Length: 248
Image 1 (spheres, rainbow, N blue to C red):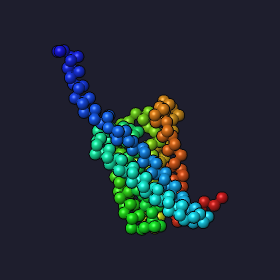
Image 2: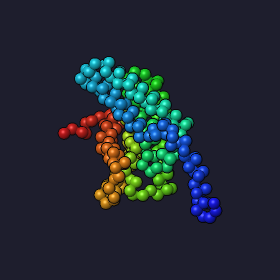
Image 3: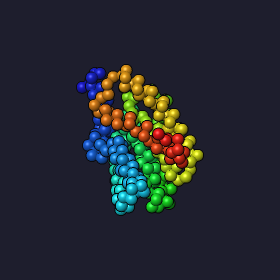
Image 4: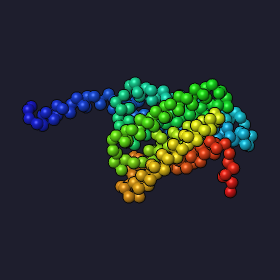
């Protein structure tokens, strides 16, 4: 066969052969957004520790929740490491997507939350986790920010997931640094998260009010819209080491 149609067909064949192993690999369908599960369990374990301090809830529940959170994080990290090894093209495609590329940053965020939950039991492990998680979160935040600055994205791709790489990471870093007594650095991280949140908020509200409706596949990201006010408030209270200015 000759002609332009045959050349187009031949040109498409290598691309199909390259993507075929990725599409057939079950691990390729493991999304980075699953790290939000570990984020929830780590926060859950911290809340049980607070409940133990305030209302004398049995300590065993707090310990069990920490162990559960660490097990879930270990499983999630193992699965994503397998995805990096067995399906690198799927990871590359995920990082190229304007929405899905926001979620890998939760790896560092989750490590920092886990560090806060582990701190009352093992300060050494908690220190290692906060350092690794902080470096990963800050590094990913820089990478994602420069990617947006260099490559314009469509307004239709602007979703609340944009909070995750910088705003969420900064707020959680502030909470983590406060737990370790580094209040001045915590306030710096809080400021970075606050300005990032306000900047992205204006873009998102314009998109939600005047842009096209969110597609059904990205509509669940609206749940992220509720997180910044709560996490920012918690980071502020922790970094200021007082709640005296929050009296009714």
